[in-house]
Length: 192
Image 1 (cartoon, rainbow, N blue to C red):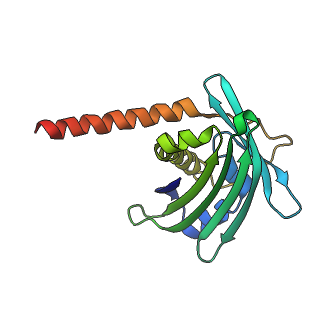
Image 2 (cartoon, rainbow, N blue to C red):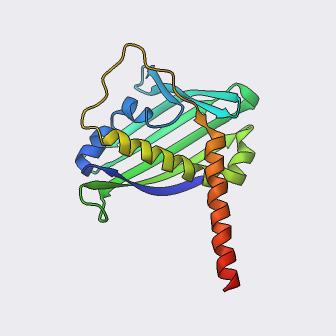
Image 3 (cartoon, rainbow, N blue to C red):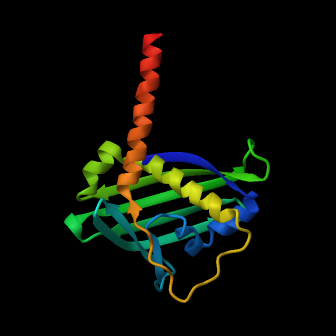
């Protein structure tokens, strides 16, 4: 599954790339994500909790991160799996930062993602993966903008709070509303 998107965040690219390099901080902006430490090779270990109504699926995996501070680019390569019905995912995300021409003092973030999914997720990815990724990116960008509006990083806490699950039904509802709005616009044009 291939996905591309853009969003804007407060701050200049030099500041934004430093914040993006703080993986633990960025993970707090992704609903359901948690970082559980690092392995011997420097990969981040963690997981993501996804809620499908009352049913919750916990994915566990590892992510390697490369950041080029001077070029304002980076990449994440992750693999994860859940015990439930052999759900597994492999994803590579590349991002590039540049000044946002539409908002002085802001940075435009361009994402490109390629994901391989298997098990119970394969059918979902074929039918609704890209709209779901769009809704997830919108939620992530909103959270990043809120996080970046704070000049200082959050204080470390002895035990990080449990992540709030990524509510798949909420994102799916956003996708449905967007598709209904698109259909309504089409109907308006079709009648004219």
